[in-house]
Image (tube, rainbow, N blue to C red; front, side, top):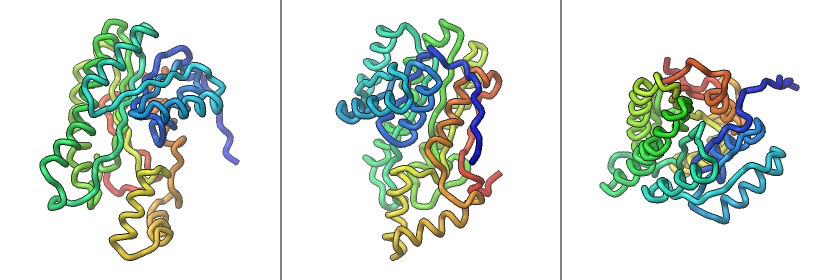
Length: 269
């Protein structure tokens, strides 16, 4: 069994906002922050889902300071209201973890204008809006960490995911530029993309691939795992620990980077 070494990452009492965190990588990231003693704000469109997630995170982490809020990342007013409430209640925002669900799968001929606009709103403009809200507070306190959860498609495009390939690339360009603009204010901005991590999104894409190829999901998954040098899918916690490191006191110089957590799956440099 691998032994975990406990290191103080300096996140105790930090105010951390994790978007779209009722499940998947957002929830896994929120859990790791809660374990570090942070004050963790989690959000989802569904009050029921986010309340249930908060209860689970408190129980798993032993940290009672996990606070659920509703926020639809497609709604600009929801985003404004969320950060207004966070500042009103906690007085500061130290870490922002941007996250949304992935856009509709499919190729070029499958997409209408509405599909493109929705993907833009969901996977690029929403991140711009959240950054717009938190940056004044981070600049005032001369400290901030912004981590954008993305996709491995920022390094190597994924067939059948034209919307994700396009919007994620735009988001990385935005994050890189923003990182250069705010570095002097002690604000670090990085992007973390998951490879094949065991989430609902990967299960959904595996099912879609199985349907296209006339195979079982087990056959598709076996083929996928055979291409990963680590020989298995990643666990959400393994991804989340990279997010937490980038937000922590252990990171004081990494900014403007796009990192993929994929067990060595990608061949791109």
